[in-house]
Image (cartoon, rainbow, N blue to C red; front, side):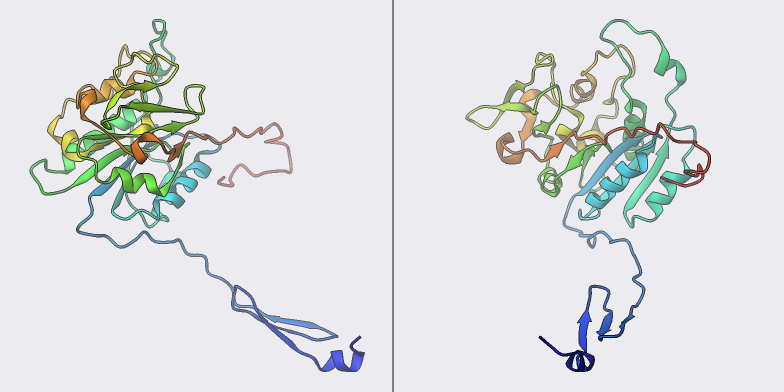
Length: 301
């Protein structure tokens, strides 16, 4: 055992992750710490040789909105040559989303269009519905067509990345070189572990691995495909249909105006790998919210 006399003379210097140095003695622990400044990671430098990824994300106000957009931000910060189009389902752009986007360091466009209340609540024929995000995705497509000249040399790819999914970084690099429309599996959709295009021995799509209505022209999830920007620009009438679209047919309503089945380009190792998951954030149980003396309504969550 070390005596008290020896302990008194021993000094152990430690450098922690903050760059602090601690002098530890028998009688006292002196810590000199410099305050860490938290700064947002910046995206990789722009490259003139890479096609731009135009990532379209519809979003709407709810308790987990900021959490989901923050998670997606932390993914997108790793992707070079990225343009994020965030479209709020709102009568105006909200302060919450505006502040979040300003602090990301990402190249972004912030848009808004409110889904009319009559479209949200109107009685519809069986199997016909108005999916959330339809008007928002169409507004982003219109923005691209209005701001990018189809005759320019700009190369890019369009992807619809909802804020409630989880994305592998590998997915974005795979889609970057899409010639027409690229496709891949999506996990946790349709009541299955994953849905996927069916690929034949020649590496071509010939059908769909899905339980829900496999006869759909493009039986694919919104997160399961990307479109070459020039294809979007050259076919200005192609959009997500607003009226009388059966549930699960939104993707088909766009893709039918762009390509045929034989044009599809399988990615993710011929659709044998999962690179995107429809995870969703669990809805929080806020049963005690509003109780006197507890959380403040002015705190941004």
